[in-house]
Length: 330
Image (cartoon, rainbow, N blue to C red):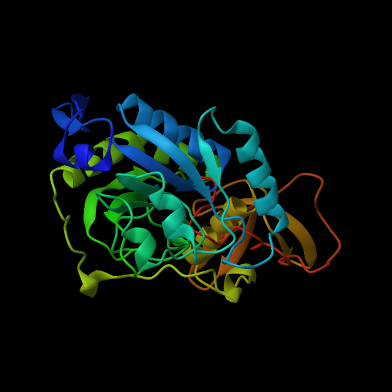
């Protein structure tokens, strides 16, 4: 079928999907979608979500480095190797070295939509103009709150009880496009892990993607973001990695939560009462741990068994390695 035929709606059916609260919506099916993401699990989930809705993923797009025209980092190479081994039959995997010829590359697939979730590079206007219905981005925050590369990290660091997810139209300004679908009430556990964040994301995304695609098919431009409410979630600042006990108890509690999250569930190594120990967790209420007096009261600190009196070898060194971008495994 030609692009012109699709633009006129020929050969495009409709299907009914359950809404978040049980009602049903009609969504045009059969959209040709290029998926841009960062991990095998993410590609697989987006592929299954789209095909379940009657859409046609036509290619995967992967950024093989953190910045265009730069050397491939080892962790991205490992992730890309896994994607290559898992890519479904018939799906092309695009690994451009830069964005210079990306628009022409995508145009050959005649995509209706480019769906982005965790792509490292800023996409220029000529790339965003290729899809017939536009480029959509999945952002793990309720925009305009936490624009930028690290929304989940800032939500944990600030002690937010819930995280959000937004599907929005992409513009040349990062995370600034009109909102098509959004939730803001996904509860963050106290001892949150990246796997739990990913499970929350998977539970919410099918409905959000369905709603967003419904709106773009109808020509809905989306809801502009309120620029007065923008909160930026940049890369983690250096002071996040230095644990001192002079701050407020809740601030320290959330800092330990964040460091555990960034280290895959393993707590940070800190100086505590004359010893170097690995922290398992903290509690704001009386617990069996070590009682530490903070600026505004007590915090109970639990250490990992067998990890007392560790060598003081730069305990916070390297905590942020490849954990500070918008595409953390969630």
